[in-house]
Amino acid sequence: MANLLVVDDEQGMRQLLTLVFARAGHQVRTAENGRRALDLLREQAADLIVSDVKMPDMSGIELLRAVRGLLPDVAVVLMTAFATVETAREAFKLGADDFIQKPFDVDELKLIVERALEKLALRKENESLKIENEALIKVQRARGSLDNIIGRSPRMQALYQMIETVAGVQSTVLIMGESGTGKELVARAIHNLSPRADKPFVSINCGAFTETLLESELFGYVKGAFTGATANRKGLFEAADKGTIFLDEIGEMSPAMQVKLLRVLQEKKVRPVGGHEELAIDARVIAATNRDLAAMTKAGTFREDLYYRISVIPIELPPLREKREDIQELVAHFTQKFCAQTGRPLTISPKAMELLERYSWPGNVRELEHTIERAVALERTNEIQPERLPEHVTQYNPARVAAALDLPDEGLNLTAHLDQLEKTYLLEALQRTGGNQTRAAELLHLSVRSLRHLLDKHGIRSLTAQLRSDAAGKQ
Image 1 (cartoon, rainbow, N blue to C red):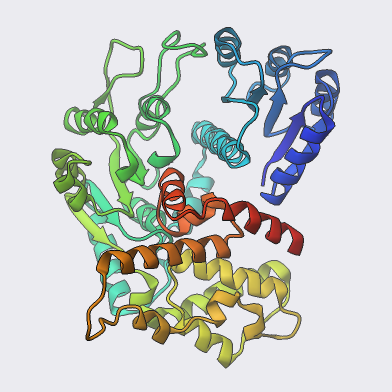
Image 2: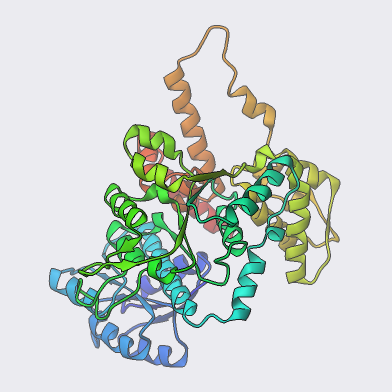
């Protein structure tokens, strides 16, 4: 949850953005002009400002200039119906994080804001690395230890042994697994059990940045490299020197960035954007992906030489449906965790546990954790009941899923059948997420752009607005 300040002279726009961002879990304040915005910021700082550019008393550019003197690190997203190259250039020169033109798609603005907040969090994390002390390092090690990875199934026992083995070497590791299987948790455990444990562990989601931003985040830049580069800045490889850098969702990296990363791994040197000198770096690389990189190399969408470079030691994490014997232990762990936060001890009813063990868990351990958090928050008795579980969990029918795979004696039109299955899963994802395209895309392991393409293909994109409206009506 972040503290947002919306600045716009139009009351309707302030009300709309307040509703949108409040539903996304953020705290939202509003100001009708720039001077009021500065007064609010002096009373309480904000994490991010969303401001119109054209306003009567003070333009968004003038506000941005004033804000930089007051809060140098606050993230800023500007909106305008009168975009010009000069305005955009000035905005980025003053350190705006992004720029969106009115009228805009609300989902696009939400995505821009979330990316700006991720960048802000990453900047804060990197700055904190400079002042980390021994106590904080010990906390990180405890958080990433093997004790925090839950499960006693044969697959998990093999994973523990692999983590302990690879922690002592310096080879590059590729962690593969579906979303929600705990790839970063494993990466942290490897780091915390390694000789590098007292050095930084730096992580980045490669799919959360454009190619240009990713390059500057990884390799840093020098003053004057581009508009807004007012000082030299370290990249994450340099910040992770003597430690570990975790490249999450490496399969989302563009071909051009793949080439640059390969060179860094080969030469063990980085060249900041706009710089002429190379810097030697000593950072162990752990990469992760939920995509099939081997298939991508055959398709030509991922470099084969980079694939072999990062997969010296491959580790594959099993999905939760393949280690159902761990579900009870995971449920107990998450129940204890969230009960500690509420101060109310709870057990789980046998029927609720039966439903949890039966469900397929497409979102894996992360989905199970969120399900238990929801159940603990809603339960008013001393035992978690089936009624506190989401409907898609309680109504899940393995036989119905299996029936979809039956091949009739008379055969079937495979193309039409697959199209229908695709449409069914799209509709199910939209229903579960209340029409939120970003969350639906995550549930289906798709990019938002790919999801929208499929929605257009099946003629159901317009359904998202109705589902969002229905979801809002239920709140």
